[in-house]
Image 1: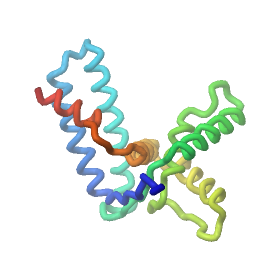
Image 2: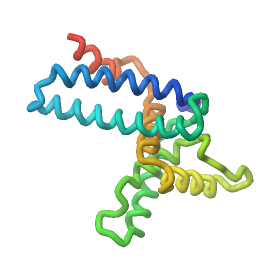
Image 3: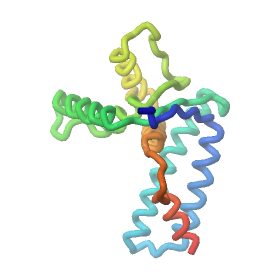
Length: 178
């Protein structure tokens, strides 16, 4: 059986341009939307999420330049099971009720992260230790949350398998053009 997930290297300048254009599209759709409807509220959430990811990429560009790259890979069912287990452990160890907000985002981002300019992996470390290093990097107080949101989004995109169907994103884009 072949691995359905491949690594994806993303140039920061290209990611910024793509997110910036997408935010422009969402803003245009929001201007035409009735703000009282549930669909307009959902569109506003998508725009806010896109803006958060854009701010994260903008920060990375300020720190590392637009030609710097980030590499991620998709996660399989076993990987997602380990993510859930890790999140449950983090929340169980928390002193606060409700666990650690955003911990799943950090664990997904770390699990799919292969390489990034802010990541300094010990190549001689075990896979488990390298995962801890990645989790520490994406969960660092020095890294804006927009970066982690963007990384999680990339990992989720790479975790999707293309098939003989029209993806939801294309369906939504087609319906907004009508």
